[in-house]
Image 1 (cartoon, rainbow, N blue to C red):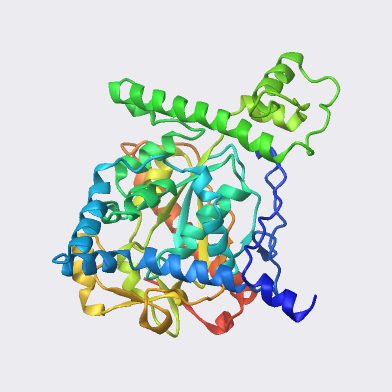
Image 2: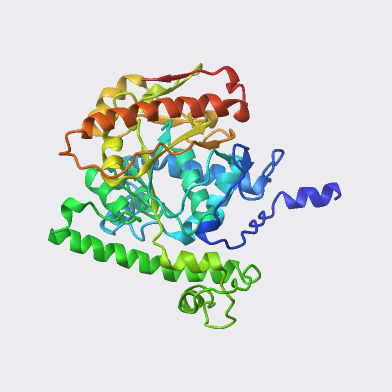
Length: 436
């Protein structure tokens, strides 16, 4: 490739990676090896267009609160006033659809993952038919790694739904409110935590089984599962025209017929393909869900230090209690590089931020702007911490079990960090982790 051709390619959109369809039962990854998302390799460098799109859009998204402030400050200028009113007016619209697949699979998020050279490590294959509470660290000035991880999971494991909880104050900000919803986020309340887990394989808690509200939740859950089935057909028809093989001999005819109807038709009802045995099993099993929780929350934003990683976990047990109530195992996840992308301050606003449950301060990166530094981000996913069967809060052993599980989570997140920091590199081989 000549120099002129190479220069020209810097201004062209990079292609989407090929993602052949796989049924959920075949969601497997090479374990304990650092892998790069979206067809990248260790030496990948984004072109000029990818970097430019990412820097501009990330700067707008992260600095959106400050942009709104500028609009308000100059609201005496009619166009600014109109822009501000229209922006605030979007708060009247519901943040739907929840977990919008087309947005998650968009070119914009592909650019963001490539901007940060996003990579990942799995210690164990995840069971797509189980529910998980995903304990994510660190929050950083802005949870970029968690955002990238969510979009990665949606594209790599399209039929396993990963929701998350975000600060309630984020849903009071125009643009953020809707983008958070499209990413699968809901305000971080106990009620929303229960509702999201109830959408998975385990269903709602037994103690609500006789309440009218549970009937509505069950209907909502069934509706979402129906939506998933129809969406799955669309995903499969787009991705698997050349990947389906003939079903194994002796398969149950009713199961095969159901699978053929649900999985094998294209969007226009033509060109049916023969389902695999694994796909037939997937049709009759309810998928699980993952619910991401940033345990350290807003308080963790003020814990960034240049010489160490620092997270808040030792006194945070609420997520363990809800995990135990639902019998959902806990995934310890550490996002390497998240704390280096942006800075946040000043520190003296910490108390006010925690009281208001909002990040009051300034996020800055490149040239003092809300544009994150282009540091590699690596998501390390540890083996699930086993929670065991469901246990109600009024059980005499409940708090003892919570303490036991919480101790394991603290130990596991520490182990995950020290096990994989050498894979990340970037001088983090000697960077300690402090858990407060």
